[in-house]
Structure formats: structure tokens, C-alpha cells
Image (tube, rainbow, N blue to C red; front, side, top):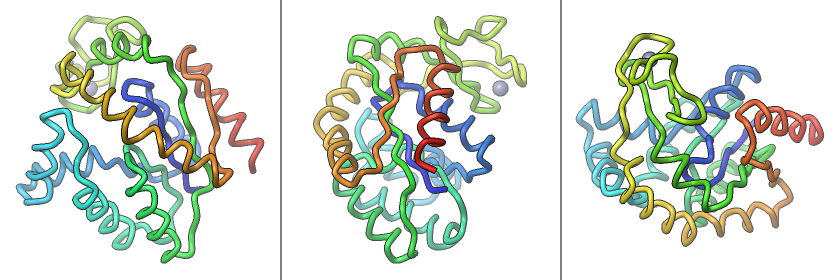
Length: 216
Ligand SMILES: [Zn+2]
């Protein structure tokens, strides 16, 4: 199964993806994660990407397509995967279709987590991430047992630069302008599954599973 998870920033894509990956035995291909790793290795690609991310902007199509192409063609030809954080523009969606065609593969489903705009700011500015293991929390919706400390590994929880208010506002504007049109693109191809994201984590996950069962 080849899946894509979409939705506005703060819709809970990351946590839902993690659970889907585990249950369906998929490889999680996260562009955000790949950029961070590339940056930590000191590669030009990662350094360039981080400049966009730190300013709350989308990484350019060129850099993003390059890192995804590398990953899919070097390691991912046969595998079942879930793409997280990609594509974010119609140009990237078209590039992905091109890559999948070359691989004789196709997307089975595009999961679209739908959340009202008013909910998003609250969701995002409350988000905290573990410095050690990367697990995600929310101060209101999914708090850790002890404030500021990871339940899983005891690591320190922090707010990512791109979860801060100014950055969130900017990302929302960009999402509306550039990413929302992708939803229409996939709708036209008949692979879009709309999921109500304004419910508990478990309820959202249950609805995703049900929608996937209905198509397979
Ligand atoms: Zn942790």
C-alpha cells in the first residue's frame, strides 16, 4: 500500500502517520525528517532546506523533489510506504506522479485530514516535541504526564521554531495558497479520502482505518 497523508499544519498528520506505519507495516518517508538528517550530516541539500523551514516557508519544489527522488529510487522501489509532508504543491504532486509512473506504481489513497482554520492555531502553538526520541505531544490535547518531560524516554520537550505563532500564521497562509489546490488535484483522480480531523486522536485513526478498508 502506498499512502499519502494530507491536511493543514497541526492537523495531527505526524501522529496518525506513525500509527498507520506501525499497523500496516509501511515505511514512513518524511521529507521533514530527511531534511533534518541531511542537515545534520552537513549536506548542502539539508542546509538549503533548513533555511526555508526556519523561516516558516515551504522548501522549494526543486530541493524537495530531489530528496524524494533520491529516496524512492535508491531504496524505495518495491516497498509499501507512507509519504509524510510531501507533496505540498501541485508541482510536487505532478512530480510525484511522474516518479511513481517510472516505478510502475501508484498511490492507493490520499488521506485528507480536515480541520477548521480556527482550530489550527490552538493545535499548533500547543505542540511539543521530544528532543531525544521525536515523539509529539500537545499541552492540551495530548499532554505528557509530567510537564516538559517525555513519557517514552524522559527527554526534554520543546516547541519547534516552526510551531511558534508567527511561523504558524505564515505556514497557514502558504497552506491555503499552495497546498490546498493539491486536494482538488487528487479529488479529480478519485483517490482522495476526506477524514474529519476535529475529534480525538483515536476517533480520527478509526475513521482512517474504516476508509482504507472500504477501498481495499
Ligand atoms: Zn522522548
